[in-house]
Length: 167
Image (cartoon, rainbow, N blue to C red; front, side):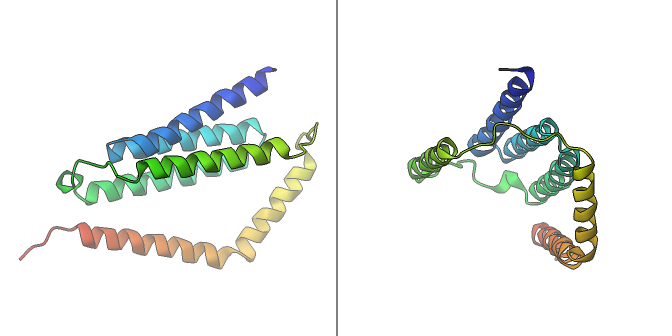
């Protein structure tokens, strides 16, 4: 195992631990912070596979904006008023379904033919990045803006719902 594979396994382990912390956290804020750890580890994986643009997008969009919106929504919904018991009787069923999903994914990975080598990014990748940017700002600009408006409306709705009632 070379150093790059070791770093990949280490960052992957951090991502899995963060994901488990997200699912198993008793406190919603700790769950959101565990999600942040997992998302930052995924950005690290993007760096390791020579995709700095995707790593930057992962940090800015998911690590920054989405986590801030989640924490903002948590602060507005008065979590102290909610019930403290977050356990559910369906946990064993969820664990069984999750284990089946992991097993089926492991079988697909084990039976797939993976290439022995990969290409190092160069001019070809820069051309693809320019093409992707051109597509994003021409063909996909309207759906992108619609999605941002939808998120804005959801945030305003959360603020209106969470606002205390005044007479």
